[in-house]
Length: 189
Image (cartoon, rainbow, N blue to C red; front, side, top):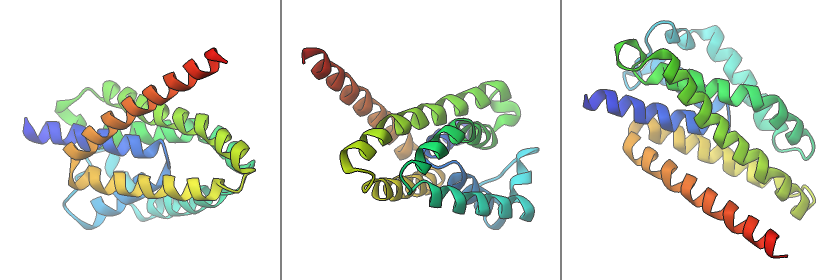
């Protein structure tokens, strides 16, 4: 029971990180599963540990990390990643939640899709404001921060899943609080 709960919390953290960067969590999970016992991927998810998948993920990660730092191109990337990030979140949730026998695969895929999709929506909502307020000069810094957060979130989801779960809940509450305050200010003007 404790292991199943830990797996779900790990899946929760990994899917959330995928909302910021689709390929970084996938690559870290693939490499961790290939070289350590920290992540055990069941069929069919163990295909992530094959060298050709790892290579493709590395190339896709380099592309995403590069284009996400260029104003206007990052917006196009966010549009394209409206499919990629939620799909990565669904794969990560399903592959790390102990899908076989513990959590229904459909539920796992939907949960990952919603978690990564929610973070992606928040990211794509904030990014145009960053572009507008900095004239595009702040995009690279915000993108680097997002990449760092995705990396830290992924590593922590693997090593300290409960802490990541609580942090994600806290950040979601803070985001909705900030958004509601912003709407109230807009309505007052």
